[in-house]
Length: 243
Length: 220
Image 1 (cartoon, rainbow over the protein chains, first blue to last red):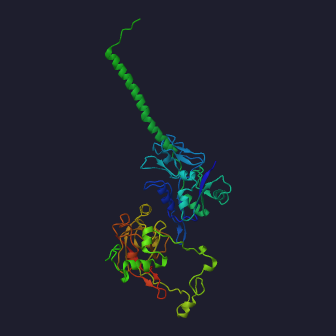
Image 2: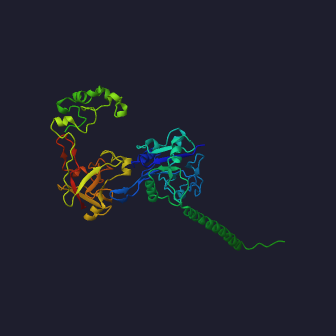
Image 3: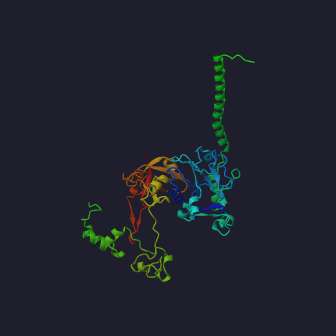
C-alpha cells in the first residue's frame, strides 16, 4: 500500500498563489476559503540584511491526525494510504475537527455546510494524475509521491535531502507534507506559523455542552411523566385494593 | 473614432481587408478569412535557445553573440559599452517612485479576474521604516501620493517595511484602474503610471527610464 506525501521546495516557491487558484478551480472551493494557502513570513532583520520565506500550507495528512478523534459522526477518517478524508454523507458540519487541526487546514464550506479540506486530490490520484497544485506550480516547487517508493523523488527528498516536517516539541503529529529550504528559512516559517496545539479540550467541552441539554431534557421528561401519573392518580382517587 | 468592428474603417489609409491581410497577417502566411474560419492558429515557435540546433543559436549582431562591447556602436562614435550615468536625486521630502510586479498578477491586465482579485485586490505603497517616521505616516494608513509636478494619485494603503531603501517608494504596477467596467478592480489602490509625468529616454537606443519620478505621501 502506498504512503502518500508531498514535498514543497520553499527555495523555489515564488508565492504566486497558482496552487491556491488551481485547487479552488478543481474543487469549486467557495471564495474566501482555500484548501491550500500561501503566506509569506514577516521580514526578519533590518535593511539590507533581511530574511523572509514563503510558506505553502494545506492538510498535512498527519500520521496521527488530531482531527479524527473529535469527529462526532465518524465522517473524518484516515484511509489505507494515509490520506485523511471526510465522508460528506456523514459530516454534520459541527466544526470540532476545524478546531482540532493544528495547521488551519479545514473549514466549513458555506455552500455544503460540511467540512472541506485537501485530500491530496484523491480522485485525481485514482485517475493516475498528480494533485492540481503540483501540476500547476509555476516554479515546479511541489512534488507528490509515495514515501514507500524508494526510487521516487519524494522518498529521496524526504530521506536524503533533509525534507522537514513542520513540527514543534509540543505539536508533533507526523505531518506528511515536507519542506525543503535553507534551515534558517524553515526555522523562520516554523516560528512565524507554528502549528497550533489541537483544541481537543474545546471539542470535548463542546460535546458536553451538546450532551447536557439532552440529559436535562431526559430527566425533565421523566419527572414530568411521574408528575402526570401522580396527579392523574390524585384526580381519580385510589382504587380499593382488593385482596 | 472608428470602432474596432467598423468594417469601413481605413487604418493607415488602407482598406480593412488590405490592412489585415497585407500588413498584419502577411508574415504568418494565412489570411483573415482562414483565421475567422478556424478561430485560432498556433505556430510552432522556438522561443528557447534549447529549441534550436547549435548552428541556429545566434543573434543578429556582428559576432552572433550578445555583445557587451559593440563595435557597431563604436563605428557610429557612440559609447561601445554602456556607461553609467548617475540618476538625478530626489528633492528634499520626496522619494523615488519605483514599481514592480506581484507574482499574483500579470501587468495591468489581471486585476479584474475573479480568482486573482480575491487574492490581491489592491496595491500598497511601500515606505521604509525611517521614511515613514520622517513623514509621519503609519502602517496601514491610506495616503495620496503627489509627484514633483503636483500630480496626485488615488488613495493607497501604506506598508511600512524594512524591505526597501529609505529614499524610495515602491508600488505594484497595474492597480488604480479607472474603468468602471472593471467592477472588481475599479478604484482599488493607486496607479503608478498616473504619477509618471516624466520619462527619460536614452538618446542612443530609445529605451525609456520611468523610475525618474519623485513622490511624497500626503494624508488623504
